[in-house]
Length: 303
Image 1 (cartoon, rainbow, N blue to C red):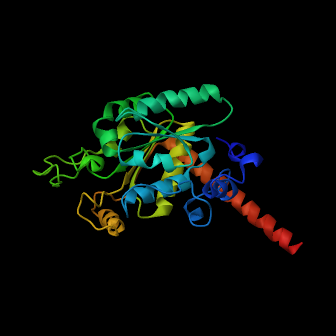
Image 2: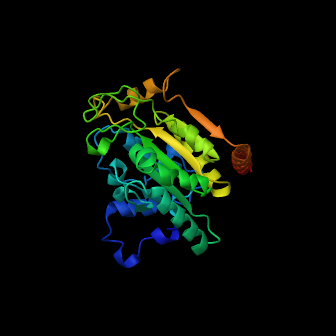
Image 3: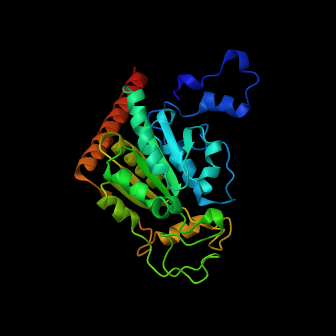
């Protein structure tokens, strides 16, 4: 999907839904420096969602969609779970895979898009929960990293199977008691960021979605590094407030508590030397471009 392809057809313009008309007129497709600050002032790429009230995953979706460098040239690959309930509402091309095989689907998709569009960079982004990523789908997740497939994997880590009643997952914290894990988990939370690093990911980040600027930076870094170097992985803590016994407005507090010093979601990054050089180069280019634009605006104003 390109900026041109979402233009309204004159013959049908008057009968198209107002939400779509707004999307064409004021969405951030094609905007070079799009980001989380556009939320609220530009048309979002998610109109609504069917997640629970106050669900941190809905927050994560908005920040991720706002942070994609080129949504018009991006394809999401999702898997069964709460995330799959949102994709029908997202104005980005997407595919729903079977539970756990999302990285296998993404591998074939990325290669096919490269052949079909050799002159256009098509970003593939996997978005799945902890069950699909570290439990049922761990083999296919790791194999895509071993093969150095150039796409980004994002895990919505709610530390249990939120979509099916609260079963234990590999990312559940030790000792936690859930509705369908009454005895409590008896082993530590799987260190997925470390696994991703050892499996060959060039950029790895783990954080909560309490701070949008940090989410934006991690998503942009991951997508840009995946384009040029190799697989990248981002693990976002999106607690299921329903299953952990919180109220609808307590998700943000839960995330902030988990990222304090000594918490299990203190932000961490693993970046290869090659990836860091690329990230630094992009930051320098962006800074120089913005400075040039600012100087040009000043000159025009003086003139």
